[in-house]
Length: 114
Image (cartoon, rainbow, N blue to C red; front, top):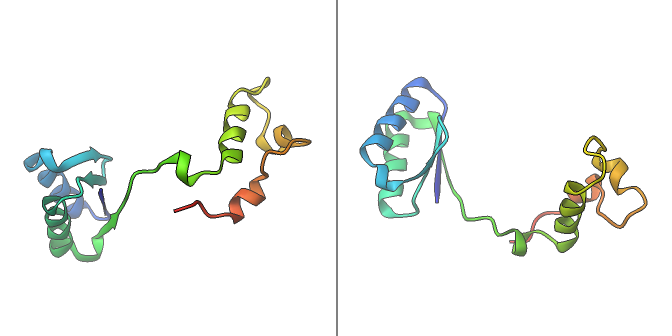
């Protein structure tokens, strides 16, 4: 998919107009941002916005997030256990104390798999 983020009022207005005119190319709208389908039309629309508004338009190519490939099992297990904790107000650092679940610091240091 192609993510387009707008940073000016004029670029946002043009983005709204483009989305209304080409709804079939829009995957999802987020106000000042939109996901276009990963097609030549999606790229054309994104590039058209940048040609008109320059630096007020950021374009990124995205790909779907597969948590079962990108995220280690230890992190997914920690999420499931933390979501099912006995006291909802317990912070993660206290919850993981005395367990093998990864620390916030350790998770911060490790990149996700490609």
